[in-house]
Amino acid sequence: MQIRVEQVDCTEFETPLLVLNIFEGEASLTGPVAKVDERVQGQISDLIGRGDFKGTDGQTAVLYPPKGAMPAERLLLVGVGKRESLDLERLRKAAGSAVKQAMRLRVATFASLLHHAELVADRVSAREAAQAVAEGSVLGAYVFDELKTRGADDSDAPVAEMVVLEKVPDKAREIEEGTAVGAALARGENLARTLGNLPGNIATPAYLAQTAERIGADHGMTVTVLGPAELEGEGLNALLAVSRGSVEEPRLIVLEHRRGPATQKPLILLGKGLTFDAGGISIKPAQGMEEMKFDMCGGAAVLGAMQAIGELDVPVNVIGVVPSSENLLSGAAMKPGDVIRSHLGKTIEIVNTDAEGRLILADALSYLKRFDPAAVIDAATLTGACVIALGHQASAALGNDQPLIDELVRLGEQVGERVWPLPMYDEYREQIKSDYADIKNTGGRPAGTITAAWFLREFVGEYPWVHLDVAGTAYGDGKLPYQTKGSTGVPTRLFVEWVRSRAG
Ligand code: BES
Ligand code: MN
Ligand code: ZN
Image (tube, rainbow, N blue to C red; front, side, top):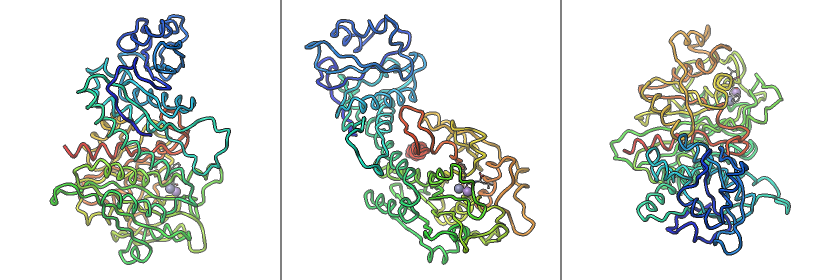
């Protein structure tokens, strides 16, 4: 979907659908909505006055202006809740609701005001509001239908274009800049979603590597892909151990975006790219196992973020790293009790082959020391325990640098991809002590998310590092108006905004 800005009065603009936002509990209309209401002989205020439209979050209604009243063919009212509680997330949701209605109405293009953001300018700038609306719109327009044969009965149709209407020239320019950023972020997140939604037989480690090559070619990034021979040569034995049970070859994918000063240490985004997790010999129950195609969502978010960073040409040095493998069963698969020597040199006792994500990340964390990172953030669908702890409302954040954790909590709230800290008390480290090796790969049931993070920390260098467990947030049933069932793309926007914030 394309977004453009038009400097025109909304009562004069010809469009099949004009979106107007309504605050909850406000009987008297103001601004452009009042002007439209006048043109349509009070239809909007009637609807509100009778109590048929309350303006609550996400409520929608379609109105048809009388012939000749105004050039718009339809009006779509979208509730945005109470004026005092309007924020960026509400704008994203309102924009998502609007675009989904537009798809249902099968219009190719629609027009929208900036969802009342102009009325709360003390809290959100036109630029921020425009970015959030673009995000909500492009994310809301996302559908994953490439594996379905299209039939004539499809009820929704893709929307090609959204036109944001703004009369004031200075504001229109700001809005243009904001929508460009928001659309790029959302396109990156939509790429992450598609990679997540694609099944294990399509989105293999080799497929993720090809996607990285394409992103690199489009945006002038250096792409390095290590296959089995190179991984062997470099000694990434933990990654190799995980992949041993599968016929799909593992990959270590490295994407380098160098747009900062040559001396600037790079930021590193690291993501778990486990393209299907059957659990290995410690096999998972059949019920719901198909969801383990989403076990590469951390890696997908890294690729989506790198695409957006390339598109926005962010003037910083950033490196994306994705270790990728399947975790299956075969006569060659690693076994409980096996001891492997990691890339770092530490030996690992495999107690449970289903704790494989930490193994492939461990090797990546020590491999990436060669880039002398300024900071590393990793995202991984690492533990079921994280879903029990935080549900689907926040990713867990753990690491060795409290200011960086605090920064991500703040940023997560702002971008609508929440993050919440869990403690890393030294005592938890006891749970992963091994009788036979330097460390073992599980710490038992208590505090499973924390002991997993402690395992990773054993392989982290001197750099500031935060681990995001996205097991509960990377995919879901698509409850938000700007989501659909399946992969959410989380934490693509958090990654990009973190990098953008470091650009000054
Ligand atoms: N990919 C899973 C974690 C997961 C579970 C993500 C449910 C999303 C939903 C991971 O590889 C795993 O299997 N973790 C185990 C670790 C355990 C064996 C210590 C888990 O959480 O059960
Ligand atoms: Mn597993
Ligand atoms: Zn896994």
